[in-house]
Length: 138
Image (cartoon, rainbow, N blue to C red; front, side, top):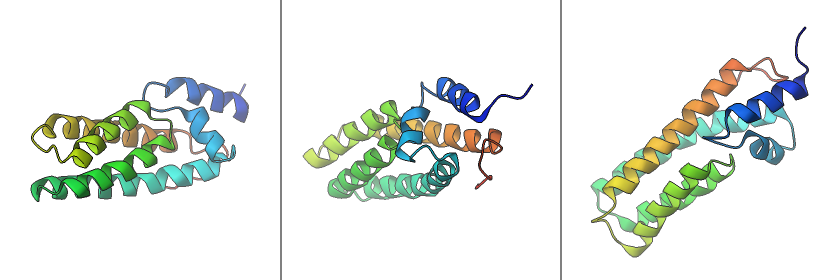
């Protein structure tokens, strides 16, 4: 017997808590799984742009741009309840604001890793569960 949509959503919430909080993110999308999928698909593109901006800012030793990009990224990952990615963005944001580029390499690498983990989890969730009341948007 097939699971109901609310049961499937509850199952999704439990499988993603290490990387992001599906219940929190779905709540921000007013409980609309289709809208959530659209937001996750948009985030995929935004994450890649942000990672490119971070690399460019580091190459140009532009602490202010690192700060601004990390701040924006912190807000983006926060919309998905991605606590580890949020903390990593907060660390890079702080170093950028302080102009401390001497210590940026490890925190920046960690941030990029966490954002990619989040992006992979969101993308997989969209593809694996496109039948949970939403069309596939990626």
